[in-house]
Image (cartoon, one colour):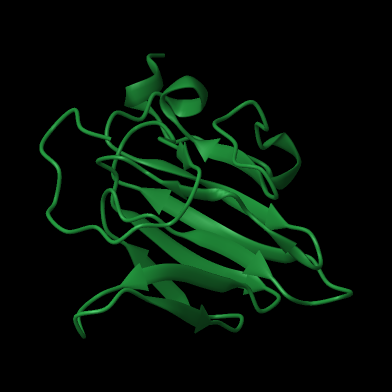
Length: 148
């Protein structure tokens, strides 16, 4: 039966770690074109070890929705709505959601000295797009297709 003609069950122990990565965290794909034949969505988990920060990055044209499952990860970006670039840190708890618009540079941090942070991620693109960056910067205008 073709991949797109049936439901797919991806077991927790079958997540695929062979996906785009960012230093300081590990991403695991659950739903992707390769695993289930999806065409417009990617979904998986990200794990951030205690006292660890990811590298700065963005996700290209993907809209990213994040659901915090475990720990208290922090999401960091720069905002200049007040006229001066200022680092904004969003502190989260299990059950919280975060939305990351396309191309917005950010990083994830886990300040806990003891506990791993785990989040579930859904992206509007079929695969995980990750563009690692040397630093955070303010997104002034939304880039056009193919930018990044």
